[in-house]
Image (cartoon, rainbow, N blue to C red; front, side, top):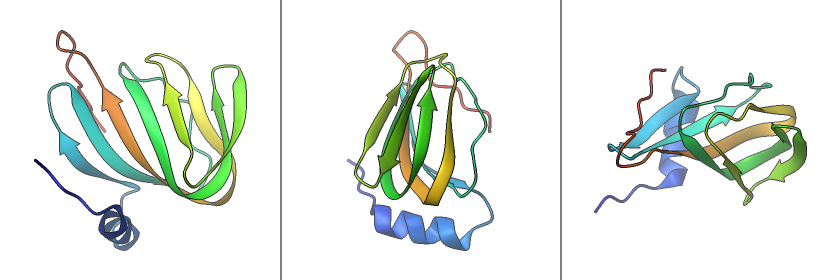
Length: 110
């Protein structure tokens, strides 16, 4: 079992120099907490992704669809789909889950 406080992670993120912190890394899943103070580039990944918006607000583009996001929202992105955050009103902080499969483990190279 692993237990992590997102409040403590967000505070660590605020004090650090990076815009993300790794929370958990397993073969089939990687979890990060990330902040998006500015528009984030379109960057399709080889894994499925799930964003839980902890705080902030703005817009997210997933493929051809655009949605407003705010704290409490969840965004799912299928592997290989272009996506980006933009028109960020308040810096977005999100818990990000990258999920692979048993046959295709998560490989992150930030």
